[in-house]
Image 1 (cartoon, rainbow, N blue to C red):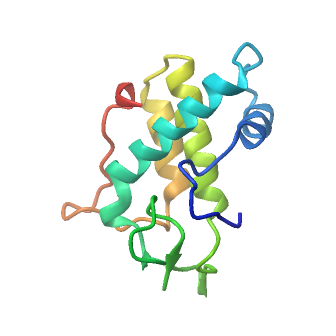
Image 2: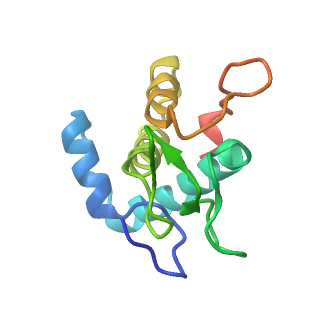
Length: 136
């Protein structure tokens, strides 16, 4: 996904709707405004929780979010330093849905960890760290 300098979320309402359709989530009752707010909070939560452990380094100094990144190598290839991986978009959409539907369960956390596999370094104990989704 190409970015713009003023981006404040990794995803938009259309991407959220497509993600929910693909995942079998019922999200029809939420307005675009509510979805966009949830996506912004989810993007902030994702960055706060994972940015120190994302692979690579930020593409430009002072960019508003942790992605895009340069020198981010995944499965033997580098991500373009002007794009956001689909795994990041899907993770933000899932976090936003969990927030809107008020679900905070182990299965949801496992989905996020699975989506982010390969994009984060594990912590010193070798396991991924996940904060409380209620913060989103």
